Amino acid sequence: MPESPPIRRRGLLVAGGLLAALFILGYVAAFLLTPFHGRSSVVEIEIRRGDTFSAVARELADKGVISHPRLFVLWAWLHGFDTKVHRGLYRFEGAVSPRSVLDGLVRGRTVVHKVTIPEGFTVRQIGRLLEGKGLVAPERFASAVSEPAVLASLGTGSMEGYLFPSTYLFRALATEEEIVKTMFTEFKDTFTAEMEARARQLGLSRHQLVTLASIIEKEGGPVDEMPMVSAVFHNRLKRGMRLQSDPTVIYGLEDFNGDLTREDLRTPGPYNTYRINGLPPGPIANPGLAAMKAALFPADVGYLYFVSRNDGSHYFSESLREHNSAVRKYQKNRRAGFTEAP
Image 1 (cartoon, helix red, strand yellow):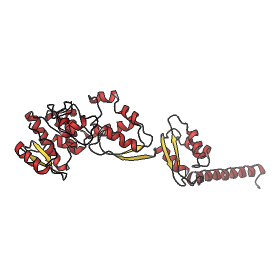
Image 2 (cartoon, one colour):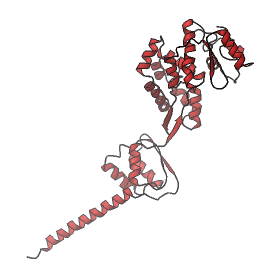
Image 3 (cartoon, one colour):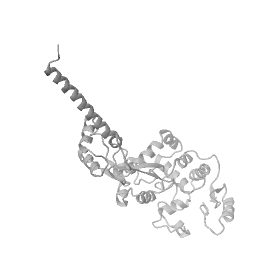
Image 4 (cartoon, one colour):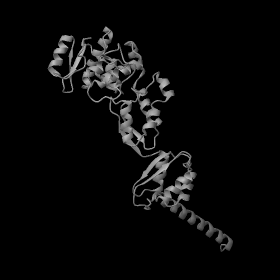
């Protein structure tokens, strides 16, 4: 029997619906996968806390990153991605597909700055370095490193010594507090429980150990000499001798002009280890792992003095007579650390 008109019409409608669905799916797929050439330059978009996904999509469209913001929002909503976007600064260069854009937003592929904090930098030097890269404002950074809650957890009045020197990837819009927290967390992850136990064996608290490591770091010299520099300070501490370390004096000076004088050495102050017994009240810089390990494991030597050879290395001595001879040989008319009698 011939097929009735209603059945034929229904078949045509179903077929038409399938074709329409395939067309829509193809259009959506083409939209998602095809890079959009709507701009000719680099585009940056900042997503702030509280921004809606619709507002983000509109800005992406306004700046030529995507072509159909409503379709972009619909696709994200259907897959639950509209609530998973990370805030931050995003940069788009060249043509990119909407799917790649959405993937970047969900994965938080924000603009980042690679920053290396050198060993031995002070908090002030770190602040200047970060400021130079446009990552911090001086006043807000100073406030972040003085946060009472963080300082209370350290049992100290300063963040000096606890901003671990390393290479970091900071988000372009990271706050000063986030940056400081990242470096402090790196310190906590580096200074292990085993290291703290070893410090206790030496009769030192963590704060004292970091303080000693910072002095070792600032004394300079090759890494393989650090255990011997450490031995000098450990030996002097055991004998009740003053450390007489130039870098501690320099740290305590308000405005150091590069010329450390004998008057500076004679001026009383909490960081003048020519005038005080034992360690200063806190670190004078942010030491690296090598300096901390040297502080924990000094070389088994009897040295009490060292002087720079002016080539990056030191000459170590057990007696003051030998040390003074080395000072005359290597420093001549220049003054050097440990030139005064203990």
